[in-house]
Every structure is written in structure tokens, then in C-alpha cells.
Length: 238
Image 1 (cartoon, one colour):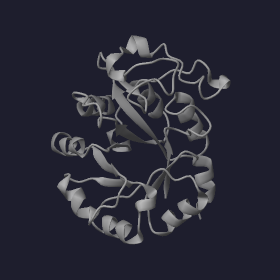
Image 2 (cartoon, one colour):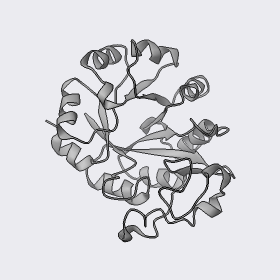
Image 3 (cartoon, one colour):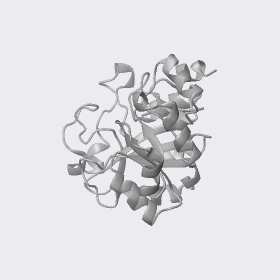
Image 4 (tube, helix red, strand yellow):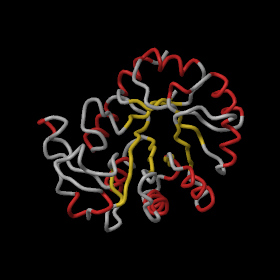
């Protein structure tokens, strides 16, 4: 079972920063999960929230700020003084680094509240530029976005994020044009995992930090877990 570090190793470094991604690699993660938005001037940036308020010393919606404004923000000081001066990275910055590592990449498109024009195309263009399509999964809670990806970029692996259980989720995969499943871990059952995998799709639950939950998901055949604590997840595997 693979381990994806949720926003990087976000227990030990500021989420969605290069420090969190470096730590994930050090702690033995197989891949990293990160979130992307578009700035006012069309730069793909790595940040979870629609605003910069929670994780930086700035204020405002990402869609209303330019990259020149966002790049000056401190994205580490609120986590710890040790990370003061950490910056929000561009997706291009992460891809440039990750191509030098063996890591896989799960990019969550944060286009649920804010309908960013062409976010899908911009992300795929960057993946092609850095020759990382084969190592990437694009996921979203916005399943219209996944269907669009299937129609325009069928060679890019896709995954549906959701919280509640789906009825016959393998049929839902087909309706989306083919998609793996990234469900909330408490909604996962052995029958769900078996059915999804029997139809050729994968299951990677989020966000799983407790060793007993990780071992339980491994036992029923989950393909990966998305966790804040990659080192502890690695140690929990049997």
C-alpha cells in the first residue's frame, strides 16, 4: 500500500510548502498530495484555502491577488517561528523539484467554490512540460471537472474526492469517464474496495493518521492512504 503525504508532511512543516514536501520525501512517502488555485494573473499556486488568511500573514482571495503579491507572503510563521519566511510555491516550482525524485503526485483541483477558468488545462500543460503525466493523479470534489478532464485529457489519471458513501461507486467511476476513488476513510468498506478494484479502479482514502486505521485499510486492499504523518504511516504497515 502506498503512502501519500497530505499537503506534504503537514504535521511537521507548514502545509503545502516546499519544506513539507521535502520532509515527506525524507520520511519515506511514495507521493505527495497538494492543492492548487489560480491567481488573478493566471499562475497556478499551491495552497489549500480559497483565501490566504489562515496559513499566511496576508489577507484576501487567491483569485483577487497576483502572483507578485502572493509570492511575498509568509506561509510558515503561523506554523512555527522555525519556518518564518517560508513562501507559497507555484505548481511549477514543485514539479521542477519532484521530477528529480521518485515521488508520485496527487494534485487536488480546488475549483469547487471558485470556478477557475481553464484550471484543468493549465495544470495538464505544466505536467506535460515537466514530463510528469505518468506520475500524477488529478483529484477534485468538483466532479464536473473530472468529467471535463476525461473528455479533453483522457491520458491523465483522475480521482473523485467525496465524503459520504456512494452506491455502486464503480458505476460512478464509469459515469465520470473513468476515475479512481479518494473517499473519506470512515466511509470505506471491504465491499466498496473489492468492487472498485474489480472494475479496474483504485482506492486511496483520506486523511488517515491512526496506525490502526491504516492497517485496517491495508487489510481490505486499499491501494494507498493519504496521511499527514507519512513516517508513522510507513511504520504502521504490516
